[in-house]
Image (cartoon, rainbow, N blue to C red; front, side, top):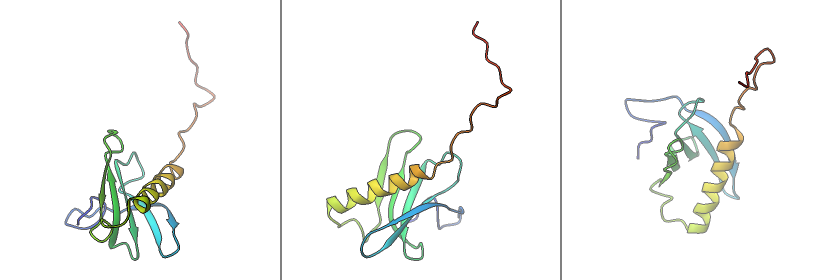
Length: 108
């Protein structure tokens, strides 16, 4: 399975957002770019083992695609991975800078 973040002729350098783990493995959350990523992937091991790819973040039409080995795992485990990955994804967002103090607004 090829992801938009890794592999193929159109290789894009992934930005790691963070990680989480269970009793057996450590999982890393990566995005294709730091600015408004529309997808993220969860990988384990050296990064070649794709666990989960979530796309459609900006459009709101989310689609989860599971890696071949992980498709047969129990639904409760999959929900845990999805929730953990979203927490890491959102926790690592860059905060929007506040309005500079020299900016004025007009009410009318």
